Every structure is written in structure tokens, then in C-alpha cells.
Image (cartoon, rainbow over all chains, first blue to last red; front, top):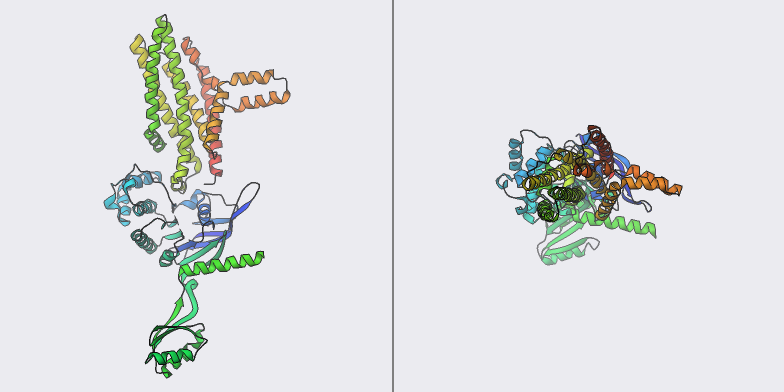
Length: 313
Length: 249
């Protein structure tokens, strides 16, 4: 896959007398058609990283290239779209006028057909005459996506797109992101909403205190070495006896005759299955335990903070 | 440029200014009745009218120039523009031209009202109209460029203070030069000399006394003023574009 975005060791240092590192040697690669989630607590440097890549803020050290052109040259922004957080739209414009205004700014000729095409793509064509001030946040975001698509963007930056959206709006935006992915459009999403990102991202970067602490494919990140085993027994006494015979095994009684165990080591799976059958039980479920992105996020940050605290003490 | 102009034209403040100017001109037309001769009355209206137009032109440049870029940054709409494959100088120049166009259109409307008042009252067509318009455009262009440059500072108060300070000093440039000659302390003389050369000299665009005394404006004088304004504007636009390029958003 083609690499659309390559950032190598980029840093942002601010302040004159007292220098402060906001982003510390961050490296990111984004491939064509990939959705990458940028996760992190407030002040982790996610938005600053995005702004540096977009040329809105200077890069103190390191290099970045988009579409092969060095950032922040105008050539690096050809085919790039950005949806900032909490943008205040020009309320006096209708959805159609807003998108047309951006088409004109981008120098797009014969824009009428293209505006219709992209407004239909984001399900906003029927609301084209509605003033932006009368649109919901979700609708305004879709209008923004239309103006980005109009420029034939191949790489889209979204800064906290899910904040302030109701559940319906979140679902619609998720579906929109998935449809953009199908068109081979790459997306870098910066968000706190780990649960939502898990549904759309291929890769996740977790940032903390200006540094990237995790940068892996989502599937790999969420996978654990644990396995959940659910078994049913003839009666509750048999189930309790089976569990009592294995004190080292963490388990819980789901129903009177049904037990759920968590196996830490996959090598013990065959032995476990054999023991259940030998005890007259029936194997109901045997599935690998996956973390949620929220759990991973909290786990990663707690480990990281513990390490930092340890380093300081 | 055009979008900036339309945005500015929508600004309610402009309407307020226009209404105020109309009222003020009407009032001063009334004051003209207190003068002893029609000629003196004519000069009084011209004098007061031009001063008001000049003052309001500066206020329009100040209020619009100081907020046009700042508002875009605060509303984050500038992000959508800056992520387009264009240089920041293009946006800056567009903002300057749009703001200037708004100030010039307002000035022409005000001048038109003044000319009309003079024609209605005295039946005379003002012969120096085109010169006044030209010199005011040059003056407003420099003021707008200056305000836009100062608007890139972090504080609106700093922008206002610097703009007003520079316009006041620029209007008294001849006195500043005189002070540089007269100063006994070498450092003060040097500093005032630097200020004289750095601050725009609005004296080059002040043709009010020539208009009031019906003096002719020589083409060489006009050429000098146009040349000076173009050079100064070029400097202001380059400085502003550079400052905007370096600004972290």
C-alpha cells in the first residue's frame, strides 16, 4: 500500500524563556485507505501533531511528508482535507452556499454537478437550502465532509469529530467514515471516544504527554493471550466440584450449572477441554479474550504513568 | 478578496458609520449657515466634511482590519482555507484587498454625499473630487495595511494602540523630522530620525489645504505620493505575509 503520510521524529517546542515540549519525537505512517485513530488524554499533543502535519503550526524538529511532498509546502496539502473541532460555520450561508464557497476557493470549475454529487454522498442534498445555523452539529459535519470530498481529498484529518454528537449522529458519522474507507480514502481521526474508534480504525496510536506510547494495528492491540471457556455440567454440585478441584483457575458461576473460566495460557486448552468432558460436562464456548479499546487505553496510560512515576522516584 | 469585501459589507458597523456620517454632514451643513459669506460657508463644509471622512475612513480600516483575520482564526474557519494548497501570502493579500475595497467604497459613498450636498447648496460641481479620492485611497491603503499587520499580534488592544499611535505619528511626520533636527541629545535625534523613516508619512497624502485654497495638484506631486504609497504598501504586505507565515495557529 502507498504511504500517503510519513512523519519522522517530529517535535514541537514552545516558549521563549521556558521551553516546553508539546510533541516529542513523534513518528506516524499512514497508508492509502487506512483509518488511523489518534487517542490520548487532554493535552497529549494530538491536535498539535495534526496541526504540524497540516502546516498550521511549524515543526520544531523532524520531518514530515504528505503525498511525497515535504510539509508545510502547498504541494503537501494537495488532496488533503481537514475538519477542525468546534469550527464556527458562517451561519448566514445555506449548506449549498457553504460548499459552493469552498469549491470557489479551491478553484473548482463546473462545481454544480460536483456539489450535488458530494452532498448526495453525505445525505445532505435534501437539506441543501437549509441555513447552517439551522442544521444540527452532525449535519454541519456532513456538509464539511462534502466540502472536503469536493476537493477530491485522499487524506482527511478529523479533530474530535464525535464530540457533541448524539448517538444517531455518531452512527451516521461512523458509517460515513467506513464508506470513505471503501473509496480508498485515508483518515486520521483524533478523538477521546475510544469505543467509537474501535469500530472504524485499522490502526491506533496512543499519545501521552507528547509521546507515542502505542502504535499498532487495532486487531493486534486488542488481542490477549487469555481464552474464555464456558462449560455446562449436569447440575450445580458437579459444576462446583469441578471448579473446586482447580483453585488456581479464575472462574465464575454464570448459571447454577454453567461455569466460565479464564485461561491465561493457551497451551492448557486441550487439557481443559478433556477435563470438562471427563467430568461429564459440555463445552459451550471457547473464545479468545479481546480487550475493548477503552480498556486498552486506560491500561496503556496507567502502565505509562506508573513507569514515569517510578522513573521520578 | 471579493469574499472578504462581501463579509465586511455585511458588517453592521459599516451601516452605522454611514448613517452617522450622513447625519454629521447634515449637521455641518447646518453650521455653514453661521458663516458670513457663501464662499466661507462652502470652505467650511468642505473642510469639516473631509476631516470627518478621513476620520471615519481610518476608523473603518481600524475596526475591520483588526478583526477580519482575528475572527477567522477564532472561528477556526481559517483552518479550512490554510489547508488548501495555497500560500499564506495569498490569503493575506486577499484580506488586505477586501478590507481596502470596503474602506474605499465607503469613502467614495461619503465623498459622493459631500459632493452632492455642495452641489445642492451651492450649485457647484467640486472640481478636486478625483484628487481627494485618489489621495484618500492611498492613505487608507497604508492605514489598512498597517492595521492588518498589527492585527497579527495576540492582543486587540495592542493592535489598536499601535495603529492609532502610528497614524498619529504619521500625521505629524514633519514635526517628528523637525524634532530629529532640533534634538540636542544624539541618541534622541537618532531615534526620532529612525521613527521618521519607519512610520508612514501621511503628510504626503494631505491635500486638504490645496483643495480648500483651490491650488492645483501637480502630476509630479501625485506621482511621488503614488510611488511612496506603493513602496510602503509593498513593505507592509511582505512584512504581514511573513508574520502570518510564521504564526502558529
